[in-house]
Length: 430
Image (cartoon, rainbow, N blue to C red; front, side, top):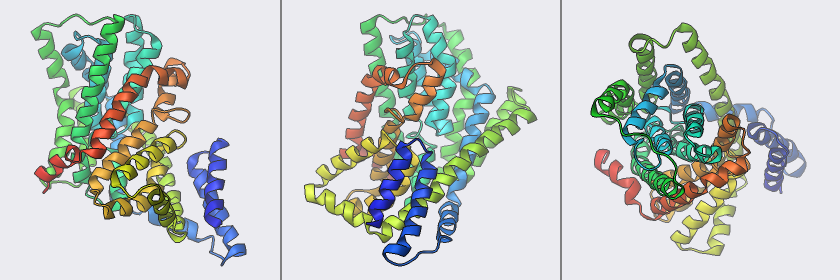
C-alpha cells in the first residue's frame, strides 16, 4: 500500500513537469508522513540523514572533477582541435562531416564522460557547418545526438562511477568493460553514416595532404593523450578513479593555460561554477534516490520485482530481455541517474544469483540508460541538440532512428555475449 503510494506520487509529480529529484524527494516525504497512519510512524528526520549517507562516498568525488574537465576542455579550444583532426582523418570518406561528428564524439568521450556535454560541444560547431555543406538540418542534428551516446560507455564515464559507488563494484573494471562496447558503437555508427550518406548523396570533404594531416595530428596530439593518461594512471595503481579525474583536470588546465593560452583565471572560475551547479543537481538526485532505495528495500520491492519477472520466465536470457525492455521504457520518461540509483540495488542481486556477471550487467544498464537519453519525450541529448537547431525532439529522433537501430544491435551483443565486456577486465585486471 505505502509502496504504491510512493511510486504513484513520484510518477504523478514527474509527469506534471516537476524535476525528478524533487519528485522523488516529495514522494519519500509523503511515504514517511503516511507511515504514521498505516503502520508505525517514521521520523521525517530520516530523509536528510539518508540523503547525507547517499552522497557520503569518496568515489562520488570523481563526478565534479570529470564535469570540470569537460567544461575546461570546451573553454580551452580542445573541441575545435579534435574536430580539425577528425576532419583531416575521415572527412574524405562517404559521410564527410557526419563521420567527423561521429569520430569527434568518440574521441571526446575519453575525456568528458558526459553525453550532454559532448552533444553541446560538437553540435554547436559541426551542425552549422554541415548545413553549409548541404546536409539537412534534421540529419545533422540526428547524427550528433546519436554519436554523443558513446560518451557514457567509453571511460571515464560518470555513470560507471556512480554505479560502482552504488553496487560496490570496481570502477577500473567497469571502465575497461566499456571500452570494447564503445568501440563497437563507434564502428556501427560509422557504418550507418557511410551507408546513409552514400545512398542520399551527401557531400564529402576533399582529401587533405599528408602535411595537413600531420599538422592536424600534432595539433590534437596533447588532447588525445588525456584519456590514455587517465586509464594508465589507474591501471598501474598510481591513482584511483577519483584521483585520475583530478589528474585530468590539471592536465587540461595546463594545456589551456600554458600551451594553447586560451584559458585564464576568469574562464577557469566560470568552468568551476558550471561544474559545481551540475554536480549539485546530480548529488541531490543521488541523495533522494538513496532514500527511495532504502524505502524500496524496506517494502521488499526487490522481491516483488523479482517475483513478477520470474512469473513470466525463469530463463536468464528472457529475464535479461525483460530487464532491457524495462530500462528502455523507463528511459523514455526519466533521467538515467534516478533509474540507476533506484533499480540497481534491487535488480543486481537477482541477476548475480542467476549467474550474470555484475560488470556485464553494469555495462548493459548504462548502455540502456544512455539510449534513454536519445528517446523522446524526456531524452536530454535530444533536448540539448534541439536548443542548438531549433528543431523539435521528434524530428531529431526520426533522423537518428538508423543509429538507434545500431545501438539496439550493440546492446544485444553486450547482453548475450559477455566476453565483449569481460575480455579487457580479465586481461588487464585479473
